[in-house]
Amino acid sequence: MLLDYIKEIYYLLEETISLSLSYFVNTNKRIHVLYLLTSIILAFYVYKKSSIKSSFIKYLFPKKIWLSKSAFVDYSLFCFNSLVKIVLIGPYIIFGFYIAFYTDEFLTVTFGFPKESIGITQTLVFYTIVLTVLNDLFSYIIHLGMHKLPFLWEFHKIHHSATSLNPLTQYRIHPFELIINNIRSILIFGLVTGLFDYLSAHQIDKLVFLGVNIFHFIFLLLGANLRHSHVKLKYPKFLEYIFISPFQHQIHHSNNPKHFNKNMGSKFALWDWMLGTLVLSKSVGRISFGVDKDNSQFDSLLKNLLSPFKTFTYSITRMIKKKKHFN
Image (cartoon, rainbow, N blue to C red):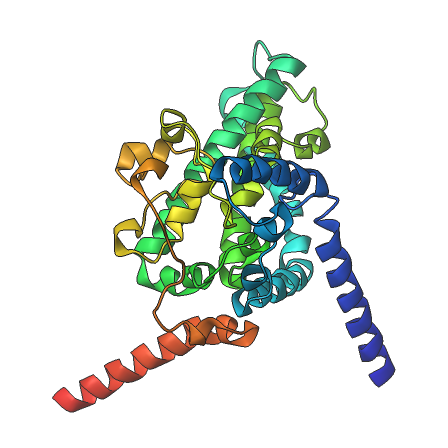
């Protein structure tokens, strides 16, 4: 019996390591080697424009960033969340196809079969556009909620507790936030896939919809990894009203109160522009990161995992004591 448990743990760890490493060869993932390579090329462009005296290698890989306590928390959360995905999230991806099926069924029952279906090319083009826009819009809405609602902020704070940024900071999120993000992604995928499956009269295999989104591919190709880095890649002013540049996202991580709750878009800056949360790169100089002057409560994996629950426990205890005092 004990041997069986040991084997289960071993296989689980093996799967976790395998999933973590697969991110470097999965074209849907930000840290795929191709996207890392294009980010290095763009970083070289910023390096040459900045007239920095140190070598490019030292500029790209400063020890104070890549070997910092904050970075090691990033690395550990990246691996830990791979385990969470295997145990909790992986089995539920199939729900996206169930949602697609029932969406298609609902539309068929409500409106009947479409008299004219759209072609395969039209389906793929419009599907990609709608999926990209809706994903980005709801990503913004949830992100806004993470910042505005105290309960959710305690979990999202883990991401902002990074005092230095590197590409793996993208995965520095609490498992609770990871689950919320995946639920959002699965719901939108299911609803949009069901809609276009109906409109195209089922001409396309649903697995095709899982393919690489061309807009997502371009986004990753054009330096998405630099969003969480010290490389200040900026876009022309007019473009930063439409797309969030890497430096604009770094501004989002700033510990300056002026920058709190700003630049919350994922790909598009349009939502920030329309709702008054946009900050352009040219208006900002030096920035530093973190959520508190003392970031010691976020300097280990365990502290980051437990931090929200410690805060809730402390708040509840205070409320109980306060109630007893007035009674």
